[in-house]
Amino acid sequence: MNYVYILECGDGSLYTGWTNDLKHRIKMHEEGSGAKYTRAHLPVKLVYFEKFEDKSEALKREYAIKQLTRNEKLMIVSANHLKNDE
Image 1 (cartoon, rainbow, N blue to C red):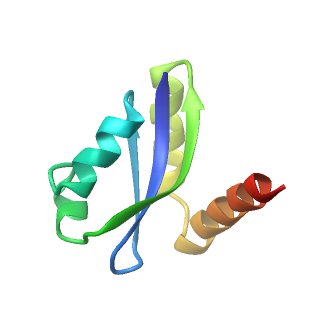
Image 2 (cartoon, rainbow, N blue to C red; image 1 turned 45 degrees about the horizontal axis):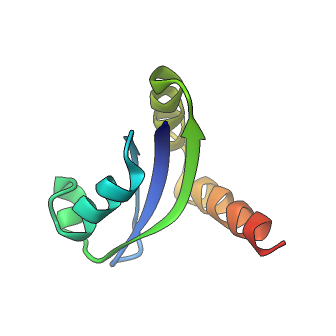
């Protein structure tokens, strides 16, 4: 399985990434070894993810999310929370 995810960093910024092992990747970010950006903005919190069977589709989605504005990313995150609350 492939995942695209959004992390909320300690300073409130958002980080978007891709992985094929979500739990391991989040743990790496939390330990400061996931990415240079998140290492400088700890702590991090997983706020959104999507699953993909195909790696290329996940990479396309990661790119698309990275092109969004902060407000558009926040709308994706809040829509996800609404679904989880129901």
